[in-house]
Image (cartoon, rainbow, N blue to C red; front, top):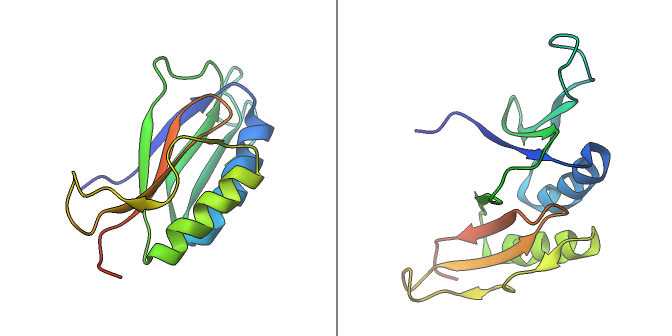
Length: 130
């Protein structure tokens, strides 16, 4: 089981705002935040997103991951997938595959994909039938 993961972003504040908006429909919020130099003189700003009580997705200021990363967030419903997609696009994300069934994965795979400000492929997916 994965405990947590994260990615590096070029514009910490812009990305933090993007993820706050995009992940809110999935129940995620910033649960921890560390300013620059909190972990040493050269450490970047860091935000931990998740559902209380613990963050499991971290956004770290710095040189963005190359190549960009794909991260998929589990959604409780297809409606939540759609809300994620709308919120992410409104927050400046770029379409990388609107909400819909991806039957090539399995018959109930309902996902939506957006590119974050650094081109990371961010997905929300629901595996349950409608």
